[in-house]
Length: 124
Image (cartoon, rainbow, N blue to C red; front, top):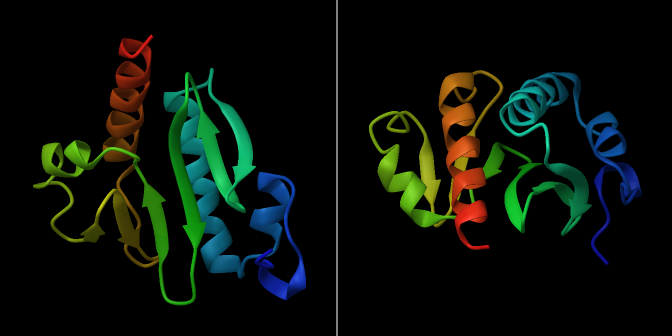
């Protein structure tokens, strides 16, 4: 089992955030707040040892790494749909990389999360 920062495996999102350096924590707390405002019905959990949101299946995830943070949108098409808005960021697969100095715009995060909710509802 991969250990988190400081040798701790977090069991909650709060624990995960507490393990981060202050600037990373601040950026991820803002992302968390935006996700929760866009999908208040989503369940917040730790999955794959990272903060994850579920609503009729996987919704989105985020994580901190040594030199960047990642926002996992679960659906490749969303990166194409938001290609223009995401130009300042590195993207790969279903992941958007960002830094505390260059955070993701809250409006874009909200739209992505809302689209994920719709996508998951449509699978029912």
